[in-house]
Image (cartoon, rainbow, N blue to C red; front, side, top):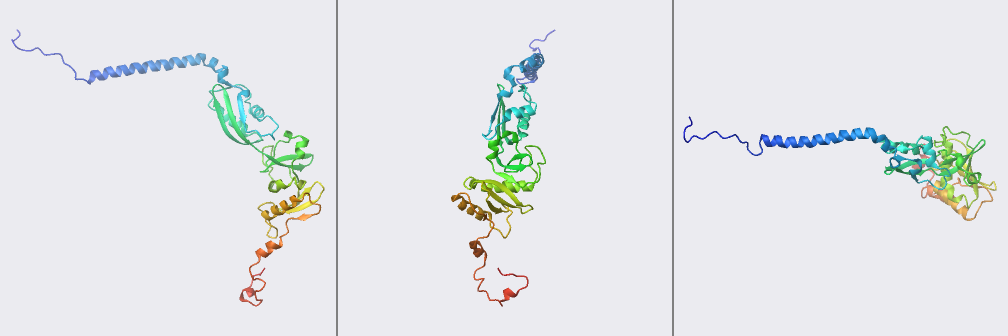
Length: 309
């Protein structure tokens, strides 16, 4: 029997933000997550089924004609892009989703004998690739048995099939090299004599045309090899050592070049010239002041091992 005035227990209620709210919120989040996972799984199945067909669409395939090369100079008469892609077996359609595609393209161009460096490779969609390179520049032709081999300013051998006979004849000829290249085109010759020769040619090149020079000839081999420049008439200009290897008894490189420039103003030489000879002005500058007036019996002159100029 219910007692009058006694209240029945009320249903328990949870404060806002309690366990119920937590569960509701988590259920909502789990539902969204489940939908997302389902979408990913469905997308994966769809890609497995239809992906190969999509990858074969033109906009997802990089073709050789869509590789755009920048940096090939006029003196290179071959198609660097075509040769690089062919030699690397990349001259077919390549999928854009290949994560190694840019690296493979860079490697293909980097090993081409005309390429000094690969500066940029960018792959874009729709299918296209942009490659920027810096090429080697020929500075001389080295005479070898059977013909001439082109080299750049670092003594790297360049492809000889990229020159016509007329083009080859327009470059300075290096004579007196007894070695042959130690590697293929694109590799260094491997002989210090060739490095000396291209250094001499590079520093004297502005004067070759006015002096009608045609050949840089080795006279004396060795660490301090001696070179001479020969004009079309066979007249020789004794140049001496290569830059940075001058002997103490020969003129410095700056003086040699200054003398060569003076000769160039008068045109081709008609008699032998020796750039190695030290000018009287240099000898005077090298002598200490009042050396001639120094007394013969001075204490300094009597010191053993000391030689006055």
